[in-house]
Image (cartoon, rainbow, N blue to C red; front, top):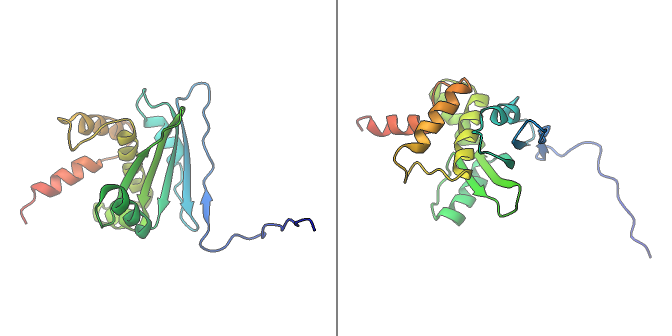
Length: 176
């Protein structure tokens, strides 16, 4: 008996993940960005924006995945031993031509966008840029302001009024 192939359903299940139109490497571009979104979530222009503001040394492919808080919490617990959701995680790739993956927590991003007074789409840009810089080897927890300065320069070039490092450092200076 030979196995039969079943056709994929014409409609996608409600909780399905979809891929935004991928931006592939062009001769004049250094970075290819693939955005993966849950059903019902949009991130208009995120791939093109990130490709446009990326530093010159950013070469290869990255995937930006926007997922549920629970998924980010599981990843954070597994890889960083911190049992809490976080806004963005970066996972460098081992393959040539690939930079890695940036994973953004949808619920945390929504909350931070509301607190910052900007759109969810803007928050995705803030977090994707931050994650990209981590993939390139920058670490704001260990360097002497190098990542903060680069993030500041790139986000200004991309039209963002505030970056993640600046926002976090201004919160830590507030009286509790």
